[in-house]
Image (cartoon, rainbow, N blue to C red):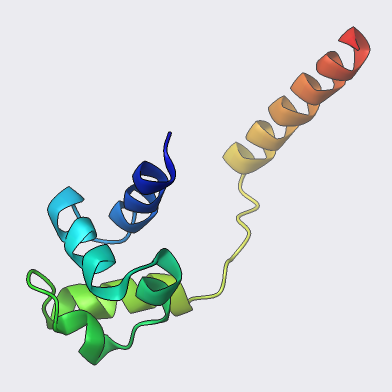
Amino acid sequence: MTTWEQQLYIIESLPNIGPVTARKLLEEFKSVKNVINASENDLKKVEGIGDKIAKRILRVIDSGFKTIKSERYLKLKMDDDMIQQMEEKDE
């Protein structure tokens, strides 16, 4: 994947952002970092970004990460640990 494709991929992962709007955001702000650091008002200046989408983007960016300790999470973690152990044995 090229740098350009990776940048689009990152911005497209934001809420309600498709490839067209991701490209508009990157063209406006020039980098992923600048998109992430943009204010709500700056985001809304980009065609396709209204009040709701700007707020959703900022909620994702500004929210702290919470670790989920559900049974499913623990099972996935155990599976990852087992895979890592098997890979280490193969080395």
